[in-house]
Length: 181
Image 1 (cartoon, rainbow, N blue to C red):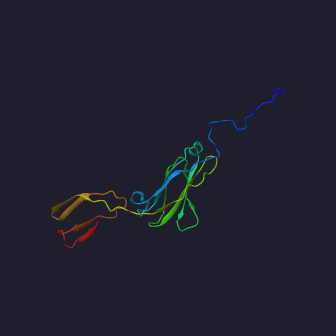
Image 2 (cartoon, rainbow, N blue to C red):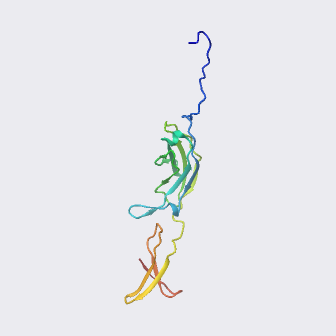
Image 3 (cartoon, rainbow, N blue to C red):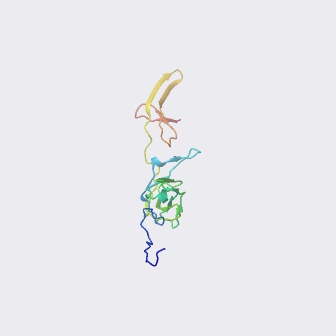
């Protein structure tokens, strides 16, 4: 009881708690595609995909139950598609079923554990590159003549999109005969 004395109440007390109504925007949004981002489906087919990377904001309400949402669209389209959301402390995800040579617009935003959204990042643009590197060279090629012909062996390569090896026979500079294995 204040016995008629005036008291002062601080309506916004100082605190070190984070502001639950302000969510930072992800930074360093990038998109990559090409040989390193190819993936193999269960049926063995190889497809291009786009890897989207970012730096999440440093926010306890984001890393403790928030999400990062990536939106993308063909550069010529008007409607955005939304990917599956990444965890609030996640740093990348892949967008599947993209087409080589197509150009996409990508943007990101964060949503805190309280359901508060950040603004979108600036939109970036990326053109999909499929396999961008030639096949690896085969090494360790050996041949041994036996009574049935020539036994040829080599060290296998680990290229994800390996389809077959091609063996050529004949002297250098001649018309090659080929057999796919």
